[in-house]
Length: 147
Image (cartoon, rainbow, N blue to C red):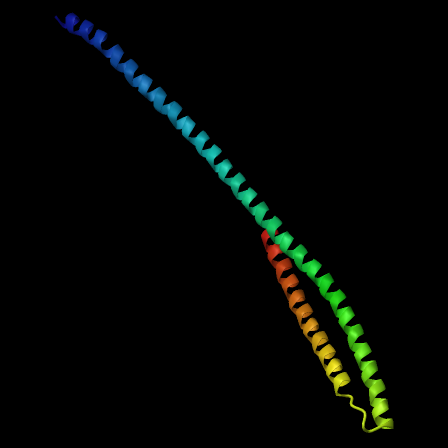
């Protein structure tokens, strides 16, 4: 009778053990796939992050380039305004000499022209100073992004 039970047990155990072994292999292979897919996902996230950072760098570099172009434009405009101020000053000086010779000479239009030219030069210099500050800040921001 015991041999009958042993035979029955021997016949019943292998399918159970094989099923457990198959489940263990499936779980093991699923565990192996998860870390790989996790790594692939992390790599994809890093690539997206790098692309985003590169886009941001390009945008900030474009802003800096625009500021540098604006600097050149402001310098040209300042040069022109200084020339106009110099011309207005020369005209005012000439009219002032006329005033000394003839006290009835009206120099107010020349004075106003000179004052306006002086005001425009002053405003342009302030714009240049603001632009220089913006350039310095943009360079710092760009350096921080690159680091």
